[in-house]
Amino acid sequence: MTGLPQTELLPGHPVARASDVDEAHEAVTRTYLPHRLEVLDREIDLDMRLNAVRVGAVTAGYLRYGSAVRLGTVDAGNYHVNIPVTGHSEQRCGSWEPVYAGPGRAAVFVPGYPADMRWGAACAQLCLMIDRHELELALQRQIGRPLGERLSFTTAMDLHTPAARSWLEVLALLEREASRPGGITHHPAAAAHLQSLVIAGLLLAQPNNYSDHLHAPAAPAPPRALRRAVELIEDDPGLPWTSSTLAREVSVSVRALQEGFQRWFALTPMAYLRDVRLTRVHDELAVADPGGTTIAAVAGRWGFLHAGRFSTAYRRKFGVLPSETLHGRHPMKGTTG
Image 1 (cartoon, rainbow, N blue to C red):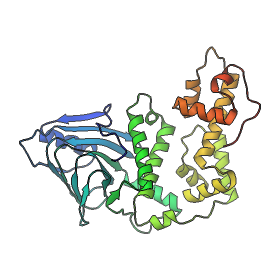
Image 2: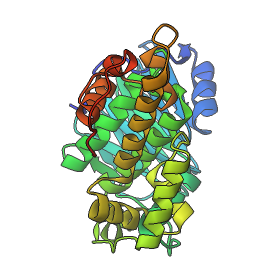
Image 3: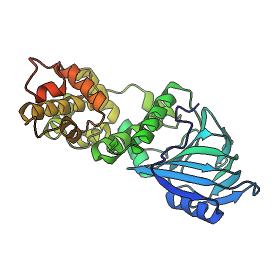
């Protein structure tokens, strides 16, 4: 099991349905990269299905071939991860050992190397493409310095590790929200945060040549940088802040920023941001006209798009429901965190 639904993913984002080889080839080239496509069993209908969505620097696609196929690329310009949803495949990046991908095992591809893939009949995969520049920039921000050598991942990914399972939950959220009308992928602030989670999750979940740096203890950001980060959040909490963008603005690494927030506020930077946004929602509801205001509209403006989770967080902080604030019952005292 991958943690993803064992059904067609991203059904609301169809790109192609093809039995013709040329049509299937053109659709995948347009969505991902130039490649070769060879049908290995012409007795079975190709029945290619491709659904895909782009969230910032991340392209996520559900790709299925009804018959056995072989795909090859000369050189990938970006990072790719192929996660089987059903079926099995044999996938090789450069001269590394082939990855026999199936339930619990995915394949990772790095830029600059050819790829060779054999997909079994009815094999379906969630195929991720992550922009090379954005991924390497995120890594630089995490470790707080320029890269000394190109980022390279281990090509076989064990999906049963705790870090990988957490990452799969992020991908499941992306798939679910992209398929839901009005989901968070349609809102810039939330989509930027989701992109950041996908990228950071991959860096932490998959062994790479910077893993020692990523997992080593980090010194907390100095108080001056923390004060500036808090000012940025307080001055404009509606901006699509992420830990990476905040760290860049205050000239520290992401890990130093996170350590500093944990030490001084016992919160992550994003939890602090959520707390500030909850306060802004409360302030709006407290003075709003109940007859002309909806809670969903106010919450949505501040990035809260899941009604149940928003209501729970609001009540935990203020001791009342959002509807009670809107209709005149204000809390005596809010909590922090």
